[in-house]
Length: 213
Ligand SMILES: [Zn+2]
Image (cartoon, rainbow, N blue to C red):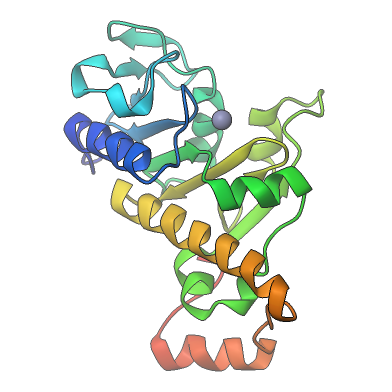
């Protein structure tokens, strides 16, 4: 049986942290973790993340059907499940609306991740996807783009980021938001300058890092 990486209390703490950081407005955002034996724990629909406690969380099966919990799971849990099913190395998914990332999402553009050395290696590959082109629906689109991808910038919507655990997913959200804001600021002084691809390879070797994951 696979071991459980995070608990419901840790999930609720991340929800509060996202709210404190101003990344979860109104009822926006949702978080989930992988449990053992094909079960997943997710935030309920219709609740502000700042108010979510461990007792509010909903357990679902691999199809997104509720197994346990007081409310109904977030409707976006099926997008989370697409990631989990394609990527056994991912055990936590955060979806939120960080202001600077949302700015890039509204513009339908990816920020220049290759201009920010630390973020490049910590965040890894992020895909820009259109969530409102149906068909296919978002979980299907995500399922087709999970190889080597840790996150998705959802055009006209927000950010989805995953990690091997909640802490890694949260750090990726925070670092990506920092990049998004800094890249916007850099526009005022000539724009962000991407690191030369050959130097990225050298930096990866120097620091024992890998990209995209
Ligand atoms: Zn959202």
